[in-house]
Length: 628
Image 1: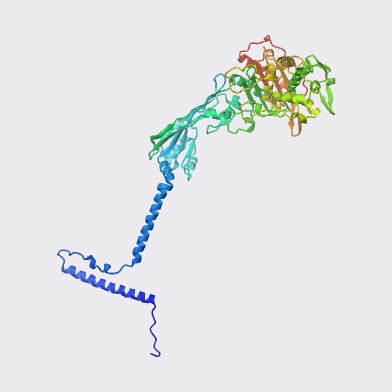
Image 2 (image 1 turned 30 degrees about the vertical axis):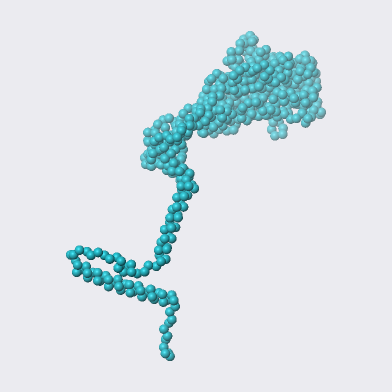
């Protein structure tokens, strides 16, 4: 009709909604009518038997259920089943090893069975290093349920503050934490008495060093894990350490061992090492060099004692030193095994080798006269001098007076290659054949680079470098009739066979040089203070300016003495070095020779070597100043 509003046309969605709403309204009406009818029936039949319910006629079932609901339910159940199956496959197949391990970690433990580290013994079987069992305390923080009072008791037994203990136990993440390594036996007993869940003990070994600082640079030390860090402890780590064992056990909820499972791997103890060192000689040598360093206000000092028959090291002592069992505030100066690691220009101790080469090549004889030209000689524009002017000197007197000029005049008759082969043959420029960490090679430049002035200065020990141990080793040439003996820090099970050494000089030349070395320790020589009561001795002094940068320090010296005893049938070689004596006396004959004398007397007496000269005191005169 004109002017009337037409009814709006309904779309498909609107019609569907209206139809659904109508059906829902009709269903609600029928439900209400059914409920009223049911209530009326119950009232009429109250007191009589309950009639059977006819579910098939229920209005709920009469209403149609949408198909998508059932499909959705089936899909959700299927997805859940698939997720569970996937997880089961992952846990049981793909990552089964991980979950087995995680499960075993909750009740199984692998207990490490430590091996006892081998002992270090001296040549007479005296202990230089051994291991004692000590309790080490550890905890599994996740297993602990200690009360505050129990933590206080634990901290007291461990000797630490409560806060420090809490800091270790309350860290997130770690399943295992050390509370104390190598604790005292008393502390271990107190902690065991507390019976705390998650706190356990294991036996570890702590190293003991009976000889202390006297043998520290030989024996060395181990770290908290019982691994060698210095000295013999490091050099023979594989032999000393042995092999650790293992035992797998099951623990209950309180951390107690219930039973052992699997096979126990027993530990294999380390092997004992028997050194060539004689602890009696070692201790006395250490005392003497310690006293000399103190008396001369020196920076450091070292002593080496070798067996002239076997090449075995009887003593090797250094100052400053340290106590292996107490290494707090330890410095590199204390750790250095100076006798093996520090190299220096050997100075006048090289002169006997030049004379020996001259004798060996028949260029000179012991009584050959050398004109020292008043103690001055010019080599290609450079002047070499003696400490005191001398006139003509025999070759023997050149050694006795330590004449630079006389030695140079002998050396300049030789080819540089001859001198180089000699120095190389006695070990200069080569690492000593010792299983010892840090031993120095020394320095010896190729002979083709030598200028005439360098050949001259090398003849009296300037221009090459050696350690004190290398010098002691080199002097076995004179002590063993011309052979350079192989050296050893381990006790030899058998005597050295004949010809085991390297031939450097003939036996006759070696004896001739020994006689010259004996003159050095007599009145008129540079080292009468090396005299030893009851024993004939021979040796050579050495004094040199210390190198600083590219030059030499004017007032810093090294003094040393290397010698043998007894002269006729040498039994030992002794080398002594004092670094930077600063109380006004610095010559080797005044600083190092007296230490040599005392060490020789004590060592030969200890070894049971009978005196070879009259046992009578001698007035020791001042030696002649050596040239350097």
